[in-house]
Length: 351
Image (cartoon, rainbow, N blue to C red):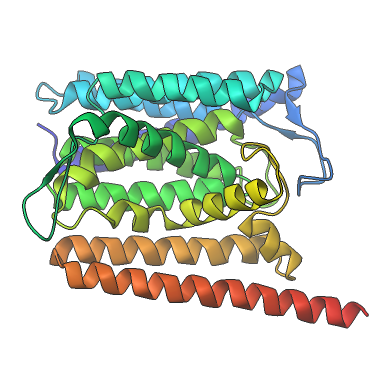
């Protein structure tokens, strides 16, 4: 049986494994030349090892196997195995992309395939809680909605991997939030996976804070994003009475960045999957903030969203979730206006 002690031990196991394995991966990357070179689109100024995702994936999976082998009663096994298997496929895709730079269209096709496999293994949105009445049965819409959510969140996490410590910190905060929500809603197995991912990424973060000594790369971002997306499907969506909007609140930072990025690129006639240097974190840097302060601002927004979501789960109140979204909308409006003002002041000072 999974207990709270199991989650703590799993977190510590994944963390310690990560602290040991990340430096080994870093040395391997330097020896083999697997480094991310600076260019006009990137913020870093020196070649940096880019396969930190190997450590994140390996530590999460190893800790998962160890915990499962020591527990006789493992609830919801097929569904959570689907998250690990789908996440592993995303990891392999990201690893190949880190090494060979795959075309965006091919990556999207493979991502949909990985999400489909997870869907067939039980990672699906087939019912959505409805605070106004009976639960909503999605029926035939279950497949497209699940694929859209899994692939969308996976790429949203990958999009924010642009500053030292940003993606890793956001992943950790969201994983902890999902873990707490899962515990509150009696989803211990989902909470376990969240704890393992949080531990692995926190160990990696020790080497990824500014100035980063290693990057997670697409392998780490795609794996982490998919696991988080899968956990939100198996835990939050099915376990909370006001869950229709909760996952959007929990993932507000990566979703906000991805939404702005995709719409901006479409308006410019560019491929929405191609990278640029106009993400929210880039705009914070351009407004005059340092890397650490820009990352700190986004951490705070992510923590605030997580705390609000956790409170809502405890209260089970539609009123609270609507108020939270009004607050979040106002905060985003103020946030964008503040960036514009700082940018205008900076440009005026340069004239």
